[in-house]
Amino acid sequence: MPPPPAAASGTQIHLNSVTFEQLRANDLSVTQATRLLAHRERMGGFKSVDDLDAVDGFPVDVLAGLKSRATV
Image (cartoon, rainbow, N blue to C red; front, side, top):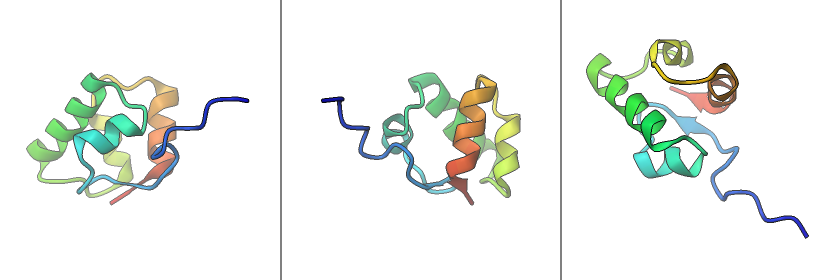
């Protein structure tokens, strides 16, 4: 029997309220989660899901998956 998926994997991610722990539960690395949260703080929040394009350190496939589950 295959292992169960991560509990939060595939869930909606609210970019302006998501926590570090929630990002980690959604398969982001420590570095990616930290960069996303630092960018949010620097910019005063996300205005659009497309603002994720300005966050460094996300491979194209990871960014696409994140954007598909993200909302502001």
